[in-house]
Length: 69
Image (cartoon, rainbow, N blue to C red):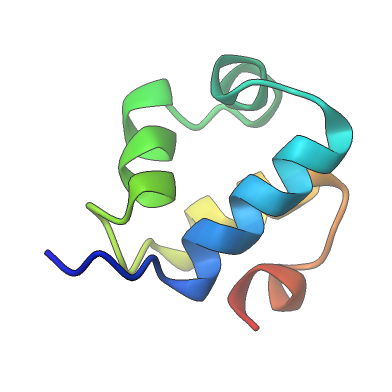
């Protein structure tokens, strides 16, 4: 696994930090399991499903495009 995090992982962390919420809180807001969210944010899952990204984006109050750029 590369030490370089994907843009998706970096952006989720960035927007989550902006809102001042934990991974656990985001998990509860979105219905995405904490395990899945952690794997995406740490880069263990580098290509999450679009349905998952939509839920995360909605919870972060951003668009999917904001997460993938």
